[in-house]
Length: 231
Image (cartoon, rainbow, N blue to C red; front, side, top):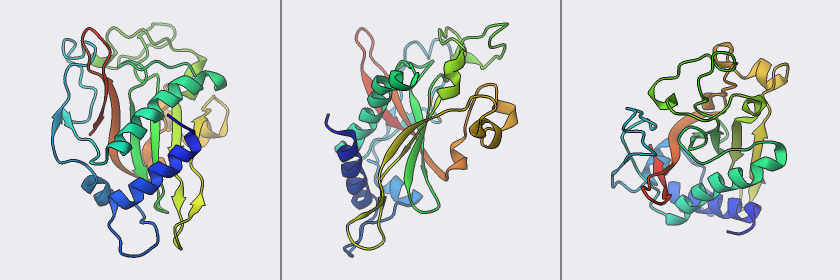
């Protein structure tokens, strides 16, 4: 699909103009309300995802979602999910696109107007009396995700290039980074709430205002069919 850096710049450029109409030459700074306006108002109901309905599992915040009006933005969301799966093993993160492991991220806007997504992998580890003795409800049933040291890497942060306040330029480049939340580290100690330290969960509110969830779900029956649902 192309070079990740150039694609990130293209995404931020498209998004900055899709989100906020501006008569000035400077790039627009995203706001939560403008993200909503960038979505196609057509409602898309979330169908069964890999047997989730049978288990009474609700994977998304709402039973319906939307997509961006600009199809290139939707394609870039898909690209990010696929990039994480393909590049993750280089840093020790092996994830699969399925409803137990990796299927969603939380889009936020930081105080400086920077757009980001906090992705969560290893979402529903299998219940195990020794390794993971926690009941996470219907969506955990049938999970084959093993709780191991790779849980330390389950939080993946993407930041869009930051538009400059003066001219069509950028104040900061885009970045995609796996956050290492191993016990004893700074992230584990200072960012993860104590009540979710065992699950190594970083919450998106730490980085900014949460706007929407971005879900990449396999809604296919006989053949995989991954689609974006913004909820």
